[in-house]
Image (cartoon, rainbow, N blue to C red; front, side, top):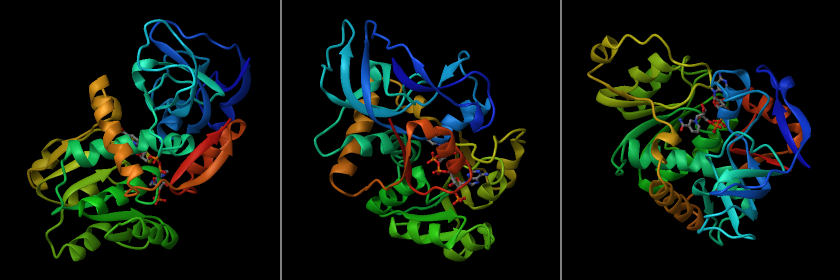
Length: 325
Ligand SMILES: NC(=O)c1ccc[n+]([C@@H]2O[C@H](COP(=O)([O-])OP(=O)(O)OC[C@H]3O[C@@H](n4cnc5c(N)ncnc54)[C@H](OP(=O)(O)O)[C@@H]3O)[C@@H](O)[C@H]2O)c1
């Protein structure tokens, strides 16, 4: 048997149950991984609450983990039993001691990346890779606004932007988070609980405003984010921490300066094996060179996944959070 988190109905953290489930053998093209650590991500909350639909109930939860390959299905060439591996796009069910994952979503870890770091950074780090290197290929002369700059994705973005020479203005909700974002390389921070974000961006950029806004907060920040862009700037809406952006009048993009908008996802970018490998190579190089360091600021036992999600949704976490089986 395998311990795992399951839920039979959508709702608050109380719907999560810690149960015994049968050990599943990998089918052709799959591997079974014994987890060293499991990544906690906001998307897990969207599935639990029902914002994102799950294929069926009861369901497992979680899409990211790292550990050791324990069993290999037919036809898998690039992985063997005993390999240290990680994945960020698994089928729901990563909140478990072991999980069966399609092998084409699994990558071997280089010596310089340990399992806990991988579980804390695969999904968030690959997201930053596509945001800063693909959705808009930042070169170094740009000024960008990045919301939730002290969070999991934000902490990696601050460091990656610093490495590129980009001026990242990060929004945060407290002085402690502001200090953390600046330590990680944010060029400036704005505490949105005390300061007017648009006015501060105007001051910080001498009226030029931002080339790109990266907004994972969603509903609460949509309009503010558009107002922080320069003409023909790019709005990257990539999350719903405060709820989804809905009912957009497309004319607003013209009124605010012929703006561009995109709504990307990791699955939309790491959609082939080749692309996943190239994005991982970029991320692992940033980790191994020390240009990006992963701050695992919270560790929860797997059984306390609900508490971990409460902390993440309640803005009580910084950096990355892992669940330890
Ligand atoms: N599209 C993609 O491919 C993709 C991939 C990964 C993550 N994401 C998105 O990126 C965001 C960050 O993910 P993460 O796992 O690293 O989480 P996180 O940033 O560690 O946590 C979310 C942060 O958002 C801020 N926030 C603002 N309004 C909030 C609200 N109403 N409720 C909760 N938090 C709020 C909080 O920071 P402050 O207290 O400083 O405001 C909070 O700490 C999420 O929205 C996630 O969905 C998208």
